[in-house]
Length: 271
Length: 255
Ligand SMILES: Nc1ncnc2c1ncn2[C@@H]1O[C@H](COP(=O)(O)OP(=O)(O)OP(=O)(O)O)[C@@H](O)[C@H]1O
Ligand SMILES: [Mg+2]
Image 1 (cartoon, rainbow over the protein chains, first blue to last red):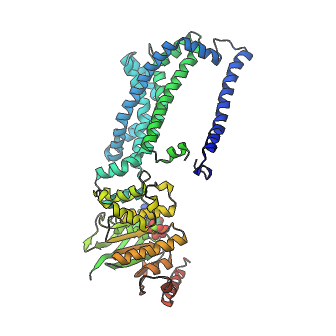
Image 2 (cartoon, rainbow over the protein chains, first blue to last red):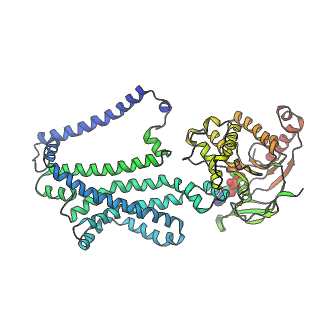
Image 3 (cartoon, each protein chain N blue to C red):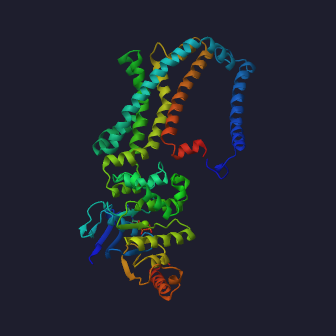
């Protein structure tokens, strides 16, 4: 947040501030895992129900090869689905925003589809397309597609009246107006969709793997849980989280590079 | 000399049926080239509406508008418009925002760099040329927006409350800068304001507008020498005009 104090922070004050803020978080984090670690012992919880984090780390480490390989598998599914969703949804959102016919036909259709849980289609796709890569990519795609397309439509439709008038008063053509004003003005709202989709992409991949798969982190979690190995399940969840964080981090980084001027980016950067 | 801007029986009604709002008119107004005309009226009387109709950015419900003898049927691109809300884009610096006007018109900004800088200097923003709008105060943004609206050197300027967000001191200074600029180049200016004194100081004519639906109650010629410095502002004629207009608004019950 921009405050009077953060206007010109001295380095010392900045570091102190960072420590002060993170301290609380780190303390909470450590506290949480300590509680987990010892509550298993104190309450005498059987290991096939819950294992302490230390064992998750130890046993996960022992099974690292498989975990890394499955992370790679799930990562490919997630990334492919996500990228295809961006590549299709963004131009489509643009087209819908600027075409009144599409806005009256496809748009309401998409709004309805957005309401249906896409995950519910997963068993169908798996029965149609088998256990391979394709149905997972499609499900990730479905999960990511709607937030991106709907936010893109919103983004390209919400240029302020004043700026619209400014553009018209210059006599600039549609293309120049688009490149110089509409596109940059739409970026922040587009990123809302990109980020939301990034958060949900791994969810789509994992559930698709639960339903029908012979590899990947979702498959792994399901199998080890069936084998009464919650420690390995947690290790799988850890890598799944890592995957989601990486995707989200990459999108956030892209946002910082592309629209450093936007208020949300400036807030996050604390200037 | 023929009138540069002719406004005849211009009316604006927003909406239809039960939610209809008669915002403005019917109004007749003729502005000669080189005049500085103020639209002075209470909030909501339709000043911005008239500016937008003149610029061809808002359809009128009735009447005709001619600029230079040609009827206004679409956006007028050879005039300068400063909108009531500023049109600075957040992703460009102050300089970039001024250049945006040029770029949108297909003019490369490089050859006009001097003009951009001299405009920024004229509004005392030269040190902020590389800053983004969010690093500027409201008044500074407004001054930047002024440069953006004027950089293509238009012969007609429509200024919708260009000094609205300025503090009293800066406002006084920019006012006299604006007067200098107008005296040097004698563009035709339509200037929207709420300030009686400002209108009298800057204008060759003041159009006093009634509360909504706005009509021109009186068109008052201000025959005072330019520049209108402190001496002129203390003259009986100046003070008389201010009083006269205050009386009109008192009659409307708005002050
Ligand atoms: N898009 C719109 N739809 C409906 N009514 C509108 C619209 N725009 C303006 N109005 C109405 O028209 C009237 C005139 O508005 P306008 O913005 O021209 O006033 P103004 O004189 O510029 O006021 P201010 O000094 O506050 O800027 C107002 O009463 C407003 O309610
Ligand atoms: Mg207005």
